[in-house]
Length: 144
Image (cartoon, rainbow, N blue to C red; front, top):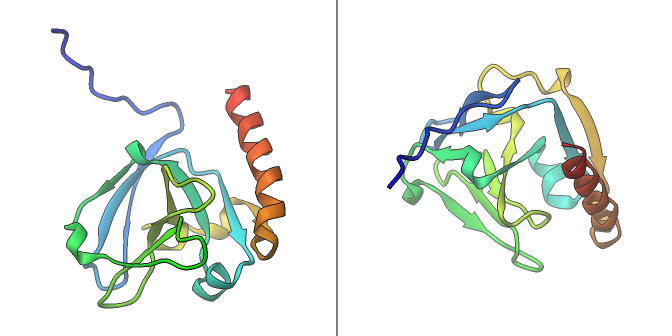
């Protein structure tokens, strides 16, 4: 049986560390952080979320999952995860990509969200907006 090669970073990728305010939740995420998005839906607006969706394989939880509380509403597809101690939502399972992880860029160490390219998602009209979002995501995948 052939030994699996360790996964190597792609060009421009790096590993970021992040977590909640009190430190009870810690994680690492690997990727090329250039573009983020902001959503105007009720929950993202109230949380001040800046979104970076990554594949699950790029995300590594460093603390026990018992440290995480969960909230779901509406379709119950998204799992809004947060620290039950300090209340910070540093990542979650997004409705738009339930196989991925949506990292709150504001919770990454050493990252200034203001220096990243920002896309806007009209989450107040989610059903209509997701169609364009998925088309753009497919176009980007095909260009790689």
